Amino acid sequence: MKPAEHRSECRCECHRGPGKDEPCPRCGCRGPSRDCNGPRREACPPPEACPFPGTVELPQDDPPPKFKNEPKRPELADKPPRGDAAELPWFRNTIRRTLREGPTFGPRKDEYLPFLFMRASSGDIGNRPLTGVFWESPDIYVLSDVRAEAAPLQPPSLGGVAKAQRPNTLYAHVWNSGKAPARRVRVEFYWFNPTLGISRSDANFIGATTLDLGNRFSLLPAWKEATGPAGKYLTRGAHAIVKCPVTWVPEYVNGGHECLVVRVTEPMFDALPPDQFSAVADRRVGQRNIAVVPSASPAAIDLSLQLGYLPYEAEAEVDVELADPMSMEWLKLYTGRPDIDLRLPARPVTTGMLPASPRGSRPQPISDLPPEHRGRLLLPRERFKRGCDPLEMPFHASIDDIRPGEVQVVRVRQRVEGMVVGGYSVVLIGA
Image 1 (cartoon, rainbow, N blue to C red):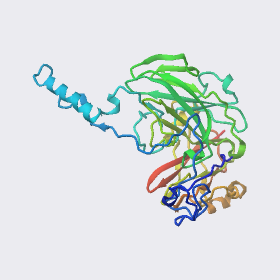
Image 2 (cartoon, rainbow, N blue to C red):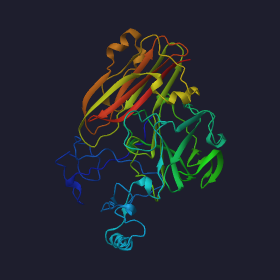
Image 3 (spheres, rainbow, N blue to C red):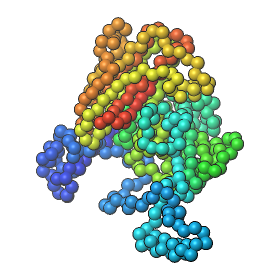
Image 4 (tube, rainbow, N blue to C red):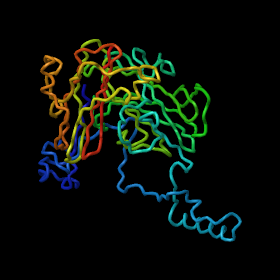
């Protein structure tokens, strides 16, 4: 399954002005109105993204102003004690300075503003950027074989997995830990082909809804049904569970093993940039890149993992890690038990990747080969230099003999210049 193709315009310095149609000396393309087909270099951007649903992009020549911040609350900085003779002059000088230089803000948690976020783990409170595994969000739920209009407000299971070519309903658990309530919060649902690099260019919009959230002091003792701008949802004050109003039917191209991304934004006081889809960098983005393979012996999976886009050349590394089931909190949601009573397989796991290739190539599935020959072709780690061109890496994982109660977690990571930019988790579990 591939997203719709969109034209890419060259934005090299030599083509910024109107009327220039000569070949570009940097990349070889021929002007702003034609596709950039020359060699991609640092001046050529990745393909233009799809139009953002429900928005109109306006040109902005000047960047927005940057507000001043202080490490502590500005109204308490150098403030004289109450009743002191210098208190009134301090207050007057503070007003004059604000009128002259603009406001100064303290830490966001101390301001009367909303603070929206989607958790990447059970202990996540919205601090970014993240380190470690960020693509196993416990706040994105799937209910399979049920259409959105017939689905309940609360999913019966928090660890459901999607089924290909069948109706699926998506849910999101949204949080607000700010001092101010959040009104008209927009919750957007997207799917991506299996990828190690999320970007707006590959986003496939499913649907969106809106809801209201209380501030961090509004904590209800139990879930309560509420009616918002777009319909009903469940709330506990500062956090809520809302379902996507549009049914999602994944195709069988990837066996239903798609990546899910949920974005939350409050347009006035906690807005999210249209191009921001990175869960590692932004607290308002949640990501779930998990493929579950429940199977009797043997268990196997083949995936083509896309590597996303880079606007510049960089050193990249993709590696495969065999992880202990206890390191994956999401398995508690899948099994429905707080204690994970699962054990590692007795037989070895065959896993790895083939070298990176241009997106759209069709390598032979490793599962078609005899088990004794698979490991010879697979790489546990691959280092290479990346440019702007989209790439993908065939991934394989299999166990010849897996028994009920046995589970193996396989994590694939992509690092660019040493920074983790994407990941994907595969769970092989004995049925």
